[in-house]
Image (cartoon, rainbow, N blue to C red):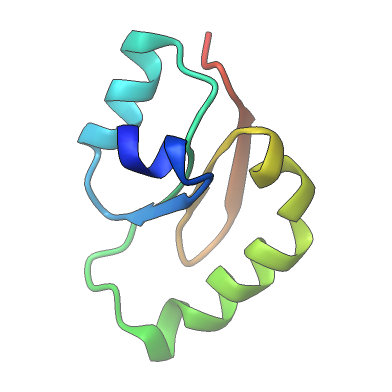
Length: 81
């Protein structure tokens, strides 16, 4: 997380620990895209991830947690409250 924040990266993960870290520390970054899917198959979720990156680029630049599942996408601005 420290490296991603220092390099202004967005973290893409299925691991819930990263969002927990953001919540506990009330950090403003790095931005996080969390996949809530059983299998992170690029053929199933890849287009949705790319669409989210394009549509929510400004929010991701500022600091956001985006949760993606196969049915919907949720955006929360950092820091988490």
